[in-house]
Amino acid sequence: MDTTTRDLLPEGLEDRLPRPAATAARATAAMMAVLDGHGYDRVQPPSIEFEQSLASRMAGIQPRRMFRFVDPASLRTLALRSDMTPQVGRIAATRLAAAPRPLRLCYAGQVVTIKGDGLDPTRERLQLGAELIGTDSVAAAAELVAVAIEALHKAGATGLSVDFTLPDLVDTLAAGPLPLVPGLKRGATIEAVRRELDAKDAGALVAAGGEAYLPLLYATGPFEAAITRLAEFDAGAGQKVLSTRIAALGEIAARVGTAARLTLDPTERHGFEYQSWFGFTLYAEGVRGAVGRGGTYSILGSTAGGGAGQSEPAAGFSLYPDPLFDALSAAEPAREALFLPLAHDAAAAQLRALGWRTVAALSPADEAQTLGCTHRLHDGAAVPV
Image 1 (cartoon, rainbow, N blue to C red):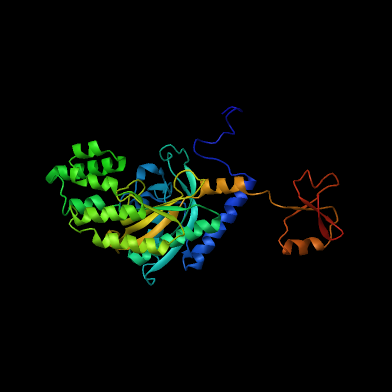
Image 2 (tube, one colour; image 1 turned 135 degrees about the vertical axis):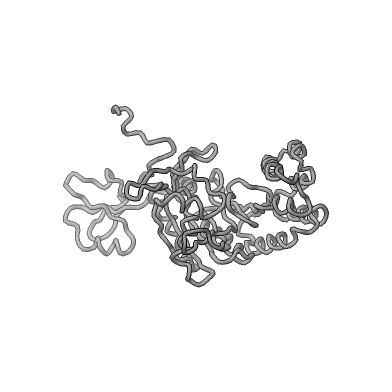
């Protein structure tokens, strides 16, 4: 490697410099304090695990997105985690299997993928979240949506918006009042209908055999209007198989209240690979793309022989707040710092106890302004530079 390339980072990876790093540390601590305040205990799984463990704990996990390599000790395939939720599921299903339910766990750590998501080239990012294990009830889902909103607000996010979805909606309708092509073609047709609903392409939806699903394209938008249209669809073609879910969405919306703007897109599937009856996406003003997702899902348990055990219901959310940190850092004023000249006295310790950030001179040549300080210690007091 020559000198022109040796200091470059791989695509999708970047350094976080002092100011944004300080913002990220503050905001992360604020969000984790919210989760702790709601009774979520923090766990810290390792960054590398056996690939089989990471890929098999939940349906929809994509091993091809993980960095994989052979462990020289066990000769088994290891993987660098791309999602911490399966790791929390493993902990709940194994080491905390006997813990009382519902079990509340939270986490924060870096995750890495082989390539970015869509137009976003980022391959390493912070994932911070909470999981409520042992139930996927309406109350559990409502608590998690409310806690996620509170955590983002505490970090400094504004203008929050939450988009609700029903990830298994097509499967539910296809198994009941709106069957799709049976037999071997069933799965392919369901996937085609899902795809065209995601694309909001009415013509392609009809061509895929999903004409009866067309009203779902219009049950989107601001929550109150969209939920009304979804209820009208359910009363007709849906034959009221969605009534309990519609009522559940209303309960969750009531829990959110005015803390965030609510929208509904009942057929949205992007980012909901393993969620079941409920999912939600979080957005913040001034931040491009989603800052987090969550919903209900199932954790595959373990048996004594190492095979698949009984699944356990759960609900949770994951926040990916790096873009939020960048936006907050750009808007925050520079931090104050107190310059300590040579032979500074004990007053400096007292000032630090009061919250001052101090920078001590190491030589007579050091100056307050050169070192980026806003104040200087003089006669035991902080004086503006």
